[in-house]
Image 1 (spheres, rainbow, N blue to C red):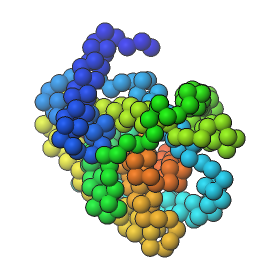
Image 2: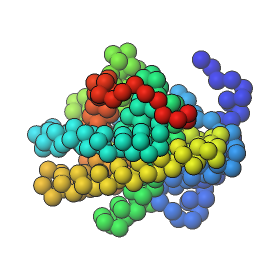
Image 3: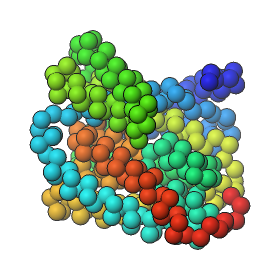
Length: 351
């Protein structure tokens, strides 16, 4: 369906605000200007009453770049380390279980959301994925959007601080080689892997199609020697830009009542998730299952797209990180019908 004239106007306004955010962050020398600049600029304007609009399919198109970046990183050495990844992945179900036992009661009993909304709001995952599946299950779409946008906003804002202080990483560096240094044929193949892998995965109804499909196709190209590079910096910057818009624009039309209840619930849940995540990150790192940096980005529930962006800039293991985030969301969605049967079908106060 083609966007209406109103949507086009709002998207143009949103893009202009996001570009201004990039320029301000660059001028101030702040980290991740293409991600955090649009995110905070759109957030501030949305809270100020501006009517913003997400970028729709165009945002999903650029999201495929993350899958290509992960797939292009897969090499025979990465495959040889698969047993180590399996051990770490085995911890994900326990991670999801602990989150369910702590976050669900918080949102259900303290903030009064209904059981379906509480479940999908409690469980971390990609912003678009969780909202889509939650809406299909009958959850409150507005509550889901704000709770998860708040989670991602907080964790993605705090993660760079940890990366800088603990691992001494410079987050202002270019996230890859310039496009001019990469053969045009490889860039064309990356675009083909992104768009083609996404559409194939959608047709096959593969979960997380916008990342998994491009990752598989790009990995095939990498292992067969067709591509030897990750996507250029310009493509990664564009991806960051659209992710930042997607998070910040979710606050459009937020009311004082929503700030008091829903956004506060998102903040409380984010802090709780952060504590649970840090416990698992420490366990994985201390047990030697994975390096601390990889564990941090794999188990921090800041959204798979956002964490992959940080992983690219930090030079972490993209394949390891993507698989953990995808596996977690698969568990959340597939286990939902079983888990929701354990709770009575009641409703909290109106949201």
